Amino acid sequence: MFDWLQNFADWLVYSVFNIGENTHLGTSVNFFVFDTLKILILLFVIVFLMGIVNAYFPVERLKDYLNKKKLFGFEYLFASIFGAITPFCSCSSVPLFIGFVQGGIPLGVTFSFLITSPLVNEVAVAMFLGLFGFKATLVYTVSGIMLGTIGGWLLGKFNLEPLLSEWVRNILNNKKQPENFTLEKRTFFQRIPEISRGAWDIVKGVVIYVIIGIAIGAAMHGYVPENFFNQYLGAGEWWTVPLAVILAVPMYSNAAGIVPVIQVFVAKGVPLGTAIAFMMATVGLSIPEATLLKKVMSIKLIAIFFGVVTLCIILSGYLFNITLS
Image (cartoon, rainbow, N blue to C red; front, side, top):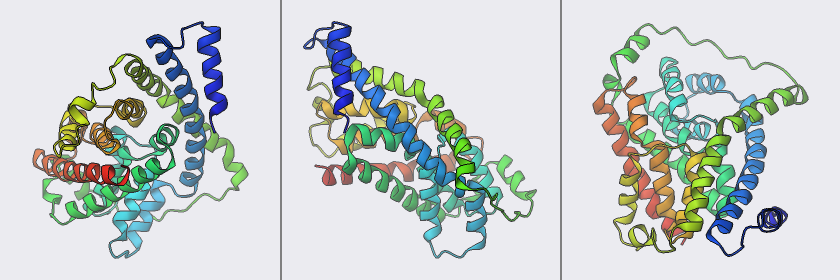
């Protein structure tokens, strides 16, 4: 599918730039050119398609739907799916978390959205598709949605509302009755300019992270020895997945920055499931995210939230390694 792009990268790096094909620099620059162009193309296409979905099913409509319908447990799944198709990182998910709770959505359902939103989105899907192929992308997407569904359901069973921060509880005490949502009536073709602008805005917002992430991945791809990561995380021992998750917690990156690095981990011998668990923990379990959540949760609630999500990510890592081996 992207052979023409690889041929272009080869021509640009080895003929135009005249960098040796078998050198560390040549390998790194070729990796950078090819992956940057491929990911940006996929990114715009998938973000545009998700923009169409969001245009007809915005967050206000989801809140209205969840408030009115008795869904017999499927509300966790719907909230998780919506978290996957909306372009929010953990920092922008916090205001939505407040909006969901204020709108009367149960806390467990809101957690389903909060868990999935930074883990799975169109940016991550586009990059996964370009770097790992369809099967790995499908397993990653479905497992991320199920992680949010199960994690939200578990957290919903703990009666955690008293552990919300005093600021959020004050908001809830003064909340207004939710208004009925009415979708603006416009034709599909009337929406295309707005959807295109939204897609371009998202791409512009993450392009620097894509470039930095691919640059780091390119340097690692060209210069890091083949068995460097495999020595610690690729041995197939039971403790490699929990170790990957623990190592990821002090870090912070969005999907655009970390996925290219994960590609290099896999190329250097780390099992794909272990690498994905590292990515999920980096995106969804970081110390910076805990700092953001302190505004809306008590320390105890943050610890419970992180504990449940950590357990789900570790189990997902083992499942990935079994499914994708």
